Image (cartoon, rainbow, N blue to C red; front, side, top):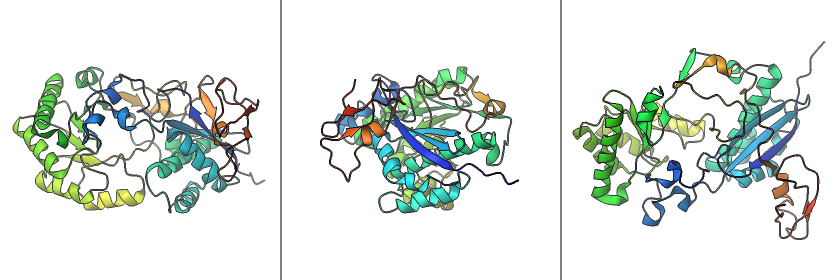
Length: 382
C-alpha cells in the first residue's frame, strides 16, 4: 500500500508584539549595547546617526514568524526579520507557490519564489522572507519524518558545536568558556584620524582583557572603506594588537575592494557574507578567493520568550545530542505574543482601505475570532 505524503494545507504569518523576541535581534529595549553604544555603521557618515543605531532605523522592520501546516496537521515554524512587510509578501505573493505543494520539494519551491520575485527582489528583505519560509518548510519536513533537520541534510560531522560570543566584554566571553570573542568597532572613517586612534586604543584594551592568544575578532558592520581598513589593520599590527579576523569591513557589493584588502594584507584574515543573500552572491565571493571565512546567516537567531526550549551553549559549546529532536526541535511558547498578520493585512491592496472590516483582535493573541471595525486600514488595539 502506497503511503501518501502530506502536502501543504495552509501558511500563516505573525508579527511579535513588543521588543526583545523573534528574529530581529536589533529590536531590543533602549540602553542595550547593541543599539545604544558607539558602533561604526554605514550611517556613521552623519553625526546625528552615531549615538544610536535605532536613530537611523536598524530595528524598523521588527520580527515576523511563519507557520506552515500540512494536510496531516503537522506544523513547521520559523522566524526572521521583516515585520508587517514580510507578512504581506507571504500572503500576497508567495503563498500561491506553497498551498498544495509537496514540502519535500524545497529546491523547487525556492526557485518559484525566487524567480517570481526577481523583478523586485534578488536580495535584501525579499530573499530574507523566502529564507524564513524555507526554514519553516525544513522544520515541517523534519517533524513529519520525525527527524532533526541536520540529519536530513547529511547528518552530524562532529559531536559538539563550539561557539564564539559577540559582545562588549570579551573577558566575560573567555571566562564563560567560549572559543573566541567578537567586539564591534566603535568609530568609522568619517570620524577622522582621532576616530582611528580611538579604535586602536579600544581594541588594545579589549586585547588586554583576554590575553595574548585568545581569538579576538572585530565586526565592522559594512562601515569602512578600502584605504581606512588598510590603515586600521596596519595600525593595529604596529601596536602589537593581534586580531583573529576583520569582519564585514566593506559594503557587501564591494567585491573588488575585498581583493585590494587581501593584496595589502595577505596574511590577515578577512570575513564577510552576513548580508549576502543567495548562492549567486556567495559564488562570486568564493571564486574571488579573497576571503578567509564566508559567513552566511544560515539560521536567524531567536531572542525572548518565543520558544520554550531554545538550546543555550553551556561553557561555550553545545553537544550535538541536544539538537536530536524532530525538525529544528523548538517548542513554541503558548504565551508568546503573536499577532496573526491577517489582522493587519486586510483588505488587500486591490480593495479600498476605507470602511472595511477584518477578522478578530483579542488581547493581541493568535486564534481569536471577534471582528473589529477598521478605519483607514487601521485596527484599534483593545
